[in-house]
Structure formats: structure tokens, C-alpha cells
Amino acid sequence: MMADDQSGQGPKKKILVIYHSQGGTTQTMAQCFAAGATREESITVVLKKAEDATLEDLLQCHAIGIGSPEYFGTMAGMIKDFFDRTFVAAEEKTIGLPFVIFVCAGNDGRGAIRQIERIAEGYKWKKVQEHLRVVGSPTQKDLDRLAELGQTLAAGVDFGIF
Ligand SMILES: Cc1cc2nc3c(=O)[nH]c(=O)nc-3n(C[C@H](O)[C@H](O)[C@H](O)COP(=O)(O)O)c2cc1C
Image: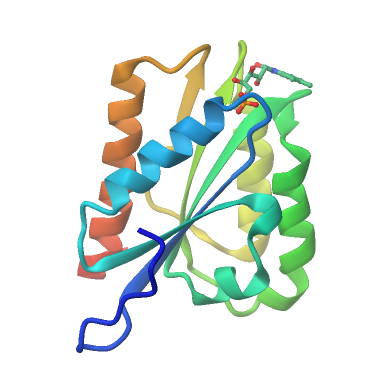
């Protein structure tokens, strides 16, 4: 999943999946999302904790999935930190980047989605799918939806429809 594969037809397109997770729930969601994306074999999926993701990861990707818990009505601090670290250098270079957000929350989650969307607007990224919000522990159905969302993003990038 993490390999930078070459197919003989040029480098594969990449999807970057960043997440933060204190209790493990968002990590599980991010892994499902990434696993779904890897069903599209012509896409390379890079799954990273937000704190480990770099400007280069962002500049090299063709789409981004952002996974965050809602903490105190907004995104996790490390997701914000990723944006803080990359915005100035990336803002002119990632215009139109397809993005999708998945959030887990104890009882709401809309604040986290809203705040990430506002930042994505600053980068001029392109919303290509409805964002996914899970309240409470994810059910198998939620995890299946996450995998589908990851696959849809990857397929859209692969076929160049986003
Ligand atoms: C410090 C803290 C703040 C939280 N604030 C909110 C909140 O504002 N709204 C909400 O719906 N859930 C809130 N929660 C619940 C988390 O969003 C929820 O437990 C989530 O599944 C945690 O994801 P994680 O296991 O990936 O860390 C909070 C949890 C913590 C630890």
C-alpha cells in the first residue's frame, strides 16, 4: 500500500490519507478508507498520521483524504498543524486538489467538518464526495462506507474524472 510503485507507464497517481487519532477510532477509519482506495490497483495510497505527513506528501498527491476526530467542536490539533505547516508553500500548487473528509465524534462532528472545509476552501481544493461523519463507535456498515469512499476517490483519480 505504501510503496511508490512504478508501472512502466510512469509513476502511479497517489492518494494521501492523513489522520489523527488519540483513542484509535479515526485510525481504524483511516485504515478502512485507505484499504478501499488500494482496490484501485493503479493508485498508490500513502497513509500517514498528520504529524508525520510532509509538504512533499501533499505536493505529490493527486487527491487527499482527511480523517479527524472532533475535539472541542473542531478538528484535532494535529490536523490543523498539518494545514499550518503546508499552507503557504502549497496554496498555489494544490488548487483543485480533490479532497474528502471523514470524521468521528462522540455526539456531533459537524464542527470538525465545517472547519476543515473552510481551510480546504482557502487552498481552493475541490470537494468531490459527500464527507462522512460517524457518531459513536463505527459499525461495520460505517467501515464499509469508508472503504467505498476511499475506492470512489481512487477510481475518480484513476479515470481523471475529478
Ligand atoms: C478532548 C476531547 C474532546 C472531544 N470533543 C468532542 C466534541 O466536541 N464533540 C463530539 O462530538 N465529540 C467529542 N469528543 C469525542 C471524540 O470525538 C470521539 O471519542 C472520537 O471517537 C475520538 O476519536 P479517536 O479515538 O480517533 O481519538 C471529544 C473527545 C476528546 C478526547
